[in-house]
Amino acid sequence: MDSLTASTTAKPTLRVAAFCGSLRKDSWHRGLIRAAEELCEESIPGLRIDHVDISGLPMVNPDLVTDGGEGFPPAVEALRDRVHAADCFLFASPEYNYSVTASLKNALDWASMGEHNCWADRAAAIVCAGGDFGGGRASFHLRQIGVFLDLHFINKPELHVRAFADPPKFDEEGNLIDVETRERLKKVLLSLQAFALRLQPKDD
Image 1 (cartoon, rainbow, N blue to C red):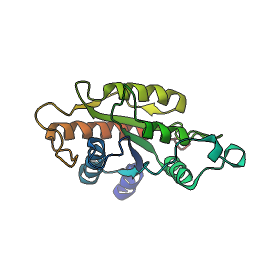
Image 2: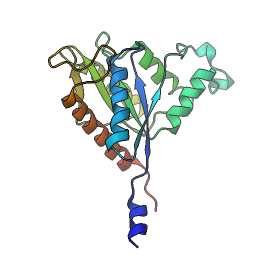
Image 3: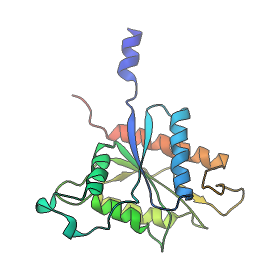
Image 4: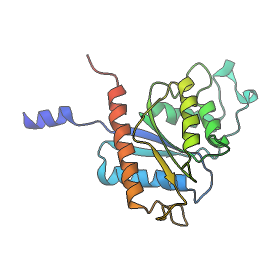
């Protein structure tokens, strides 16, 4: 009976599609995703990070769309498949001109085109790093974009890392080295996990 109870109450493993808005190899935001992967492996059972590389996507161009709006270039089809297969999302985006990066917006647009919006009705979280605002304005703009995409962002906790403030948050290769920020990131992931589980359809 005990083993049966344990098996029926165990949390399912959630697949988190993670997107880095920066294409730079040593980006802090890539470092945040790597740290998220490590945290899930070390101390968050039931959560698995799947980093989706968006660097090879073509820029959105309706001339590349075929089959009456439902055919896409191979790289875009692969993106849409991974977005569709995910249980929830983690966005790590720098702030460019008070907004998200062109590369991230490009991915958001490609995966929402056609009759099927691949982002819809899933939980999501945002982590940012930057100057005095820690990338917060990019985070706020991404939340606006998410309204139309039917994304459901966690509200708290927020993680806007003031990357230039002491103590150092990242090393020269973009790895997260600050213990307090790592703990804050863990709380974001736990909140995402809990919210994603709440949004999953319940069996009758």
